[in-house]
Each structure stands twice: as structure tokens, then as C-alpha cells.
View 1 (cartoon, rainbow, N blue to C red):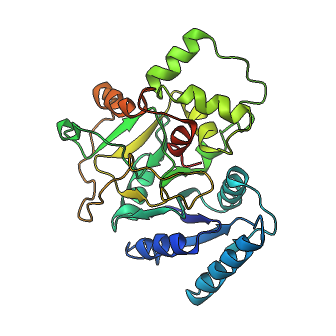
View 2 (cartoon, rainbow, N blue to C red):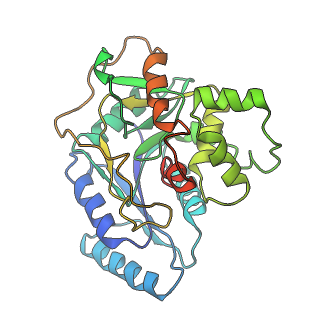
Length: 295
């Protein structure tokens, strides 16, 4: 196994974090991997109480490398700072946030893909969640690649992470019609709205920046045929999410991708079917757009 770390991010949801960690512990690699846990700082007194509960839980679990921010950084800065810290020590990393539960083979899949695609210039990230697909059974292999990135349980390499320009939107001009059409076709019809919201500081998203960088570099994300992650944060408990069932999925605990293509290829039919989830007439408000990236 290469130099891989597991990074867990949390904030003010102790019950969600407990579920996340309990499911991760059912993965056989959990005890082997070096783990880092980053908890963002409180905004108010209620947050302090919840974060103290998290401290007690992690102490009882005897976790090392737990970092509690004294101030509230916000989602984007918390994750960027945490990954930057770990990237100075490890070649690759698996990232899970506190509103996700994973299958028992999630870490195996992530590590296998990190090793297999380490030297691939066209693969920028590994995603554990798979968006709803009606025709996934037409896939001959257990994985596929997409131009769209999803941050619900994912992994990448230090050399890819270092290529991200986090200031990509600071001097961004208004998108031209051809550029909008290109985004719609390749990432989804919701993506321009996400970018505009990020530019206007209406959302605190790092994933929009990561995804746009990946798109500019003409790179891809690797996805499993069936989802290995379930988002449990769509219950009104999160700062950046609302109650919605659209992205609900059932975890198949027995599924472990083993059939990989001899040579990676882009299946545009599957990719376009995935993008149907982001048709403008299906995304009725900004919050649902934000939910796509869990930010």
C-alpha cells in the first residue's frame, strides 16, 4: 500500500460524526491507515457544546491527530487547510465528511484506485458516491470515468492537489455563451449557477473550485458502478444542506469493484445520463444546487 492517509472533517454534528466513524471502522483498512480528524471551530455557544461532545467521543475512541480549530473557518477553508496539512506528509489521501456513511469496502476501493491510477495524467480524483443511473447495468466494468467531480467520499494525490488554483474565480469575467454551453455539456446545467454563487460569496464551496480546475485540465473522476457512499446530511442538520431525498442511495455492502477496463475509456452515454440529474428543470432552487457538492 502506498502512502495513504484518511482525513475526516466535522463541525457541530456529533451524532452524524459517530455514524461516519462507526461505518468507517467496519472497513478492514481503517486500523492500518493513519487518520487525521479536523473539527471546525464554533460560531456560538450551542456549537461549543456540540463540539465538546465530539471531543469526548474522540477521546474515548483514543484517536490521535485530532485538530480542533479555535475559530470558525467555514467549510471551504477548513477542508483546504486540513488537506494542505496532510499533503505535506502523505502522497495521497481519502477524504470523508461528517454527514457520510460508507460501505465496508469503501476504503479498499479507494486504495485500489489510488494505486492503480497514481500515474494517470487524465485521472484527477476518485469518487465513492455514484449519482442515480437508470442504465448502469450497460457498463461492462465496475467503474467508469466522468468529467464531473463529487465530494461525497473521495480521494486524490498530493501532486494533483497541488495543481489546484484556488484563486481561479478571483478575476473571473462573465461567462460567454459558448463557455456556458461547454460547462452545461461537460459538467452539468447547474454548474454555472454554482460558479456564480461562489464568485458572489453566496456559497462557501471548495468543491466547485476543485471541479472547475479538473474540468480546465481536461481530467476525469473515477466512479464505482454502484454507490459506496450514502449522504445522511439531508435532514436539515447541516449548515449547507436542506432536507431532500433526491440523492438517497442504498449501500450494497457486498459490492467491491474488481472488474477494471484494460484501458480507460470515456463512456459518453453514461456520462450524459448522469448529467440528467442536473437538468435545470430538475434543480428548483439554489440549495439543491449546493447539495450536489455538499457545500
